[in-house]
Image (cartoon, rainbow over the protein chains, first blue to last red):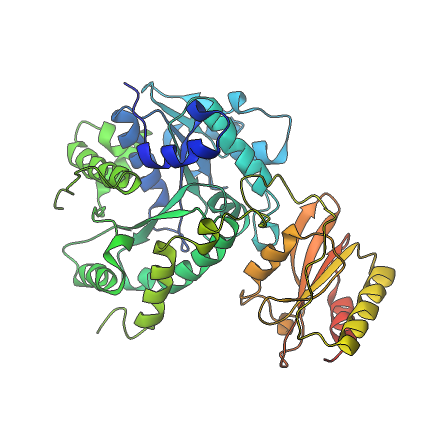
Length: 285
Length: 168
């Protein structure tokens, strides 16, 4: 079953010359590394695809973490960075189907040591936008892009091109102190992408048995406007490590029902943000 | 110990968050003049009408900026130049590369844009072309020199450019 993401779709078709080929693009990005971007990206993409949304997960992290998690041959695959570097490469060469018909992947690529530092920002904007247009033309409903840490370089170009951004944030004091820098960076990038919609910060690696973790989560929720915080939280759980070791989303493991529910809750919450007229109530975690 | 509030300014953070949640004023105003809307296809050099110079640039200072730009063109093969004042206004422009003005403005608050680092921030915008951003010394007013250069200036060139910038 094909499922559309309503609101951004409706907005964008006004400007699009091919209304039926509209895709909703979401960057999963953070200022800080190691916050769980790849885990969130893989499992959220799987949740959308399981719910019938034709989903492409792009690995835009030069470390190739999505590819390394889900495909054993990822280092041999042509991917996102090759597309940026070589105009001869077409998107058809890059899309990797999975066992779930609505779920496809694009690896990071062999040009994984591609220069993506602060000096390169803006250099790939046109190519990234071309890629998203090509994804739309392939009939995808959702394009989820797992970026490298930081809001500069190619990651900055991705954020400057997508419809929306969601920000995983590790639930611990040191990570949360980086939030001002994150917000400053996003405000700057909005100059380049005024239509960027901020879906919110998603707390990750939450440890209910650790006071510092729960206090940090509570303090961040108190600090920021409620609309800036996604209500679904991702717990720290060995299940995600086991899933990565087996090359599967956590929800696809036999013991992954709880993880699947959490990411379905996150998916529903994001759909509500994209379509504020639905009646989604987040499930308590 | 409070894990957050003792480390940051809650009011400033809240303001940043609120700004992000509100629709960008550029969206409401149909950003046809921006260099980064949907029609943006790359950093091709483009000739367009020059923006009006800000009042900050007096006639004499404007003449000195023009001489400075000529010197950059002759000595460093600069193919384009514009100069922003500390409020993002255009102090001088050769009338080209209008789409890069907003990019330079967006990078102006960057902490890495400081003369003490002895190296300019640069963006590669074509095969053999860089947008080089050089902040002048932190005097009042401060300016941001934006030059299109085929080669990146080394530390000594960087210093020469800084020292040659005219005083307002």
